[in-house]
Amino acid sequence: MVASLRLPSLTSLLFPATTRYPAALRRRVLCPRNRPASGFATAPSGTAASPEVHRLRSDQAVTPRSQDFNAWYLDVIASAELADYGPVRGTMVIRPYGYAIWEAIQDYLNVKFKETGHSNMYFPQFIPYSFIEKEASHVEGFSPELALVTVGGGHELEEKLVVRPTSETIVNHMFTQWIHSYRDLPLMINQWANVTRWEMRTKPFIRTLEFLWQEGHTAHATPEEAEKEAKQMIEIYTRFAYEQTSIPVIAGRKSKLETFAGADTTYTIEAMMGDRKALQAGTSHNLGQNFSRAFGTQFQDENGERQHVWQTSWAVSTRFVGGIIMTHGDDTGLMLPPKIAPIQVVIVPIWKKDTEKTEVLSAASSVKEVLQTAGVRVKLDDTTERTAGWKFNFWEMKGVPIRIEIGPRDVSSNCVVVSRRDIPGKAGKVFGISMEPSTLVAYVKEKLDEIQSSLLEKAISFRDSNIVDVNSYEELKAAIASGKWARGPWSASDSDEQRVKEETGATIRCFPFEQTLGSKTCLMTGNPAEEVAIFAKSY
Image 1: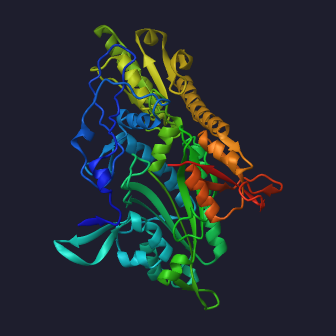
Image 2: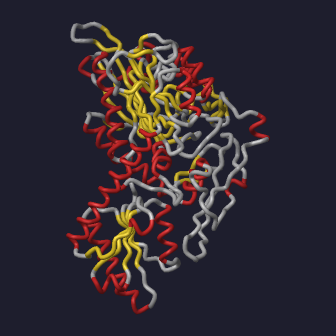
Image 3: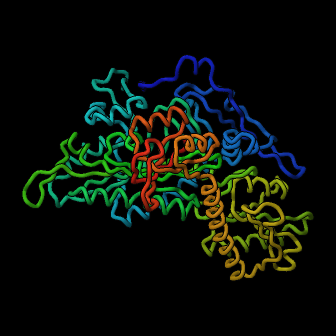
């Protein structure tokens, strides 16, 4: 039996939020579309999903982003075939296309983790509840989100088990058995795993009862080594966000109130979504000796003295997929940065007469082989059940960066038509690109790089135009009320920070690593301030 310490209220069960059924893609051409899209709805987690959630809808327009951002987001997830709801509210089935994006994230980070000396391993998902209780702030921070197993094999368990919310406790239990001497340090591991946190309100990819992530855990002989590690990993996440996903995150330190339960310091990368809300996209924690003291994780130093290890933990999750959708998507659907796109180029052959079919498909197959050999992730859509117009819209919805069109005239001229996903309509379409392998490969790779850079530049421009520098609490409130981020000097108390949250709905997202020089005055108290903080409403 799985139980939770935090359950949906009776009101939310009897009167759930109004369910919206996301729409499938409406063609801009006159061709019927029969592919249905499953519906998503924000609803209490942990209860059986209503059959209505899975009602299939077809031939309806995606909600415009500017009209209803949340409905647009859910529509895109359904129509781009990224995910669907599981049978239990709050759970999510990640479909192949959505999982392929997660695999691209894994592929990049796995290389970086191993380059920096970390090894992959795996810990059990069931954790004795007594482990969670050992670190006081940790249990206090996670108790509302815990899922508990109380019955196994038909019998009441002697000790209830926690379904993994994070792994600091079980990692320390094992580290205690593996670490004895300074020669055993540093110990640096990572695991790719699922996590369960009993959320009241869920949103696909952003906040679900169960999600996928990687979590790194390290143990060190000195506090300096642990601090260096924690900062190194947030730098890796920052580079990943910029270079692979074209998301211009702001890296910095969390406030005391926003610090991970059980950590001394939490570093974060904060991203601005298309609705100007903040998304915490990754975190790295300097745990100090909090867990090692709770679990007795010690080593004998070079002088023969017993010392507690210094530790870190760090993670990113499938929430990054949601961040990509909300940063780059438009009214047409998903828009993927080429470096993490499962399909970078889709080839759509076009013919009207059966006599044209063979030569067009032959040319399309040759183009596919040329690009594939050059390392481009390419798909040839040679299906005959749909029109070319339908295919154009379908692959635009799925965010494929480049579309290549090949018709009879293109074959005769040995050329192709290339369309960019990030530039809509005729402006993004170029005719007469030679099929000659070296020319075509060079052109396609150049355009993929341009798209990657263009998406980043657009996101930076959007972010910077929506951050307001403030010098008073009134200015902060005005900035937040207008839907923007507020950046200003801060040295006020935790209670002042809580007041901002209660009165504006915004929290301190971080104290950015990049700080302005010169003297500063706290926007709240008027006292001297050493740092600028960023405030925003968030997911």
